[in-house]
Figure 1 (cartoon, rainbow, N blue to C red):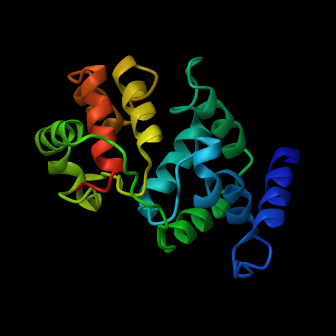
Figure 2 (cartoon, rainbow, N blue to C red):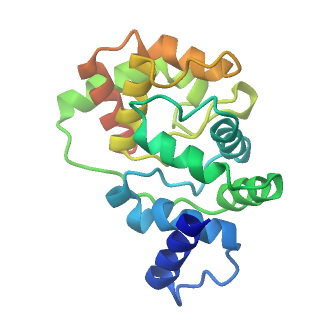
Length: 202
């Protein structure tokens, strides 16, 4: 609880007067790490624009221990500790609120054309069928939006799926499917597809 209050205080200090007066307290707490203005520095994904079902599911998985328990997942362990302080109403409020906010993530330039082309081919062959041609996600397939995520976070999660840090829980069928796909990618492949998505799928 003390950690949550500290995050809330941080957010209020950073974003006071920016039109966020209608932000629920629980959402303001999350923004201390996940707001687009600080997400790159904290290594946390932006939540704005993500599907409501996916946000709810991840918080529930951190609560029930099916995510964030691996010793090599320090950030997941932090999220698991925070999620355990949330009520069911908190989770519903958070998932609904962030899903309704527009993403402000800016495409990340800088990758060379060859890397992006490799990432494009990998995305089309391995990711697009579930996550959509523009990484917009697919509710019917329980596939989250990827276009709101930065390349560093995408690469970290692909690496976690690849190495077994994430996607091993029996109750997490989509996670197990992702782990199977990620295990077929080399480190260079994962870097390329993360760069491609992070650059806005040029």
